[in-house]
Image (cartoon, rainbow over all chains, first blue to last red):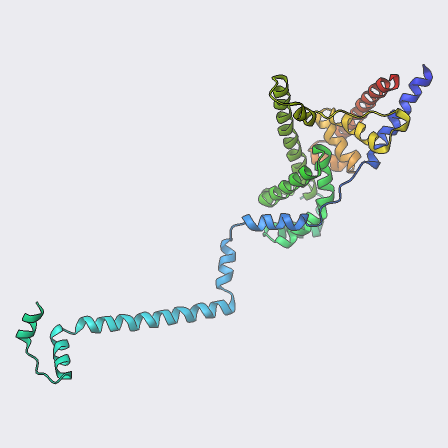
Length: 114
Length: 200
């Protein structure tokens, strides 16, 4: 009986000693990268990051140049449109007739085009 | 701030500024112990890595709310313990519903085997360390929750009493008491287990 108890006690002690020898996991070598990419994937672009893009030297110059070109193009296009709108149909017909060697006959022309 | 060295304060500032390099460094620093802590609760490598990943995502999301009243590592391991226990509770609920299905006859024999694998028993004297570790694991899992957490952190992961106390947000004397009671419980459970097997 005493022998049985001491045997059991021995087994208990040996088993309690298994804390130190318990299996340990080696982390996956890509674990940190996976966590990082999950964070980067769901992270919204912060306002400061967006602002830092616009204050970046070469990007700022390119943006300014682009804005300047866009402005010039719109000024030219608008002025051309204004010129077209400002000229009357009569002027257009006269210049066309002159170019083809005819005198402008406005009444009959307008009648024929109506 | 408590027990924070200047490098820890600097690391915390970088983390709060959203520095991903600092974050990756933090992950590399703690991943080994953290995955193993989760593993002691969930008992599967895949689940342990998944839970650990959730822990780091939570740390990243909530770093601004960390006030520095404990060590950063204690805070991280507190999140790990909470998330692991949540995982185990969810898994137990699933298992209970599986048992109910079995009782009601909604699963076939193959599924029954998957729910409750039969334990293999061998002669006491021939028990390998791996088997002993499994028996111990079973006994630790049967401990009350607080004792289980203390045993996991101190006996398996090697945290000192003060560190366990910080992670569990309790006093060192409470940790000592928890570990003492856990040891007594384990001795009792193991003695019961071996006396049953001694007779066979």
